[in-house]
Length: 330
Ligand SMILES: Nc1nc2c(ncn2[C@@H]2O[C@H](COP(=O)(O)OP(=O)(O)OP(=O)(O)O)[C@@H](O)[C@H]2O)c(=O)[nH]1
Ligand SMILES: [Mg+2]
Image (tube, rainbow, N blue to C red; front, top):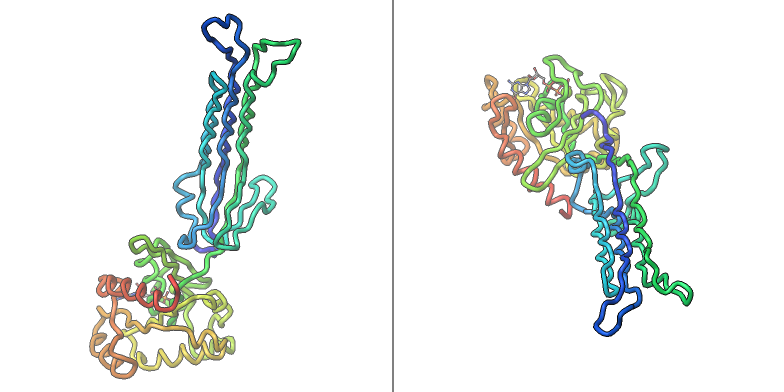
């Protein structure tokens, strides 16, 4: 997943209306009872609803066709057929629905209470009770239910990362993303492997957390050295920055300062974000001693991880969630 836009195509169908009934009263001593065929129920609608805690469109990729229920036919004794049940489609706030053929925007979900009827169900047909008149007292026909409608939709969501992974080139950012999330970024043993940001979705129980892996930051990046800092705009709206410190390098104590300085030059907002320092490549020689020194300098809550042996990964996941709760209202 390279793109910051999650998108998927789905087909939606509203329900057909139930047919009106053709029926005549049958009572003792009334040989020729009048018409009493009831109306058919309306077909169900296709309804979109916002669900605040949803973060991605993943659930729409598992199911591609959403169909509302058909209305039930009318019955005798003017009995009205039951309306078809609506099909409800949940989307995260920020979702945009387009007509897949014309690409025209049909609806944008902004408010968390947004509810949008995308397609109405077909009307139920009227029963023959409605078609009697002085001339035609026994109509032997009723109205059929109207057909439901079908539409192919393109559903889009601009993903906003919750967490940005920052660090020097080669620190193991992309490897970490590939271990924590569904993403499959390019990984290599040379700097500047990542040229454009990667996004991944980390699932912990029912929660999805979106992580962004961005190109490595070096000293002077803000003045255009390396890949520069253009890509930092992709993490401007994150809640938390994960500083990944490469413990296989001798400059492990300077890395935090380098990243901090570059962020500060780019924007104060970015520099003031919640941050979590994590030591990477704990499996490498001397890494454990370096971690101790890092702790002495920046706080004893810092822990080490290895994206290769998976040491510290569960702990990291739990900590990420805990910190996110602290910085957001989820
Ligand atoms: N021993 C060890 N090697 C690691 C670990 N994590 C990553 N690596 C290796 O470090 C190298 C760089 O990994 P990447 O994930 O590409 O690093 P990056 O920070 O994304 O690098 P850029 O995209 O160039 O900024 C690769 O050779 C990885 O296999 C780790 O925990 N332990
Ligand atoms: Mg990378």
